[in-house]
Length: 154
Image 1 (cartoon, one colour):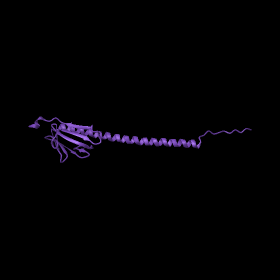
Image 2 (cartoon, one colour):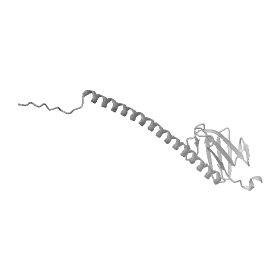
Image 3 (cartoon, one colour):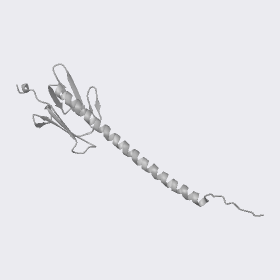
Image 4 (cartoon, one colour):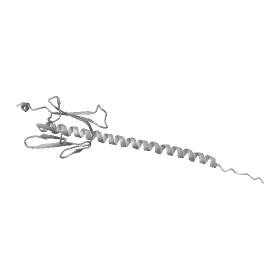
């Protein structure tokens, strides 16, 4: 009688431990990279939202600046008063937002300059505004202006 022994093909415990360690390292790297990607996505989303706020402010001011014939800057109250004989609109400027009757624009202005007939003014009538913003490059500025009515000189 012959006795034959059959070997069972299987992995050794050492081989299994090596596979588990390598798998743990790969999973750890994957979670680290996932965290980095999520942070980048949040940053991109915040930047997009900030740029959208700046564009909304530019559109609203351009429309209102050209809708109302007179614009007055009051530095004491940090208010821009746009008015016509039958209607007026006020923009209030604060350190982290610009507010009007309908909208709140969450933007941090680094520098705001007011102009009248091409000259910088500190108060009174204005026909142009230049904004530079925090959290953007210095190249990103907006300039809003309107064409003056010739009767302002009479």
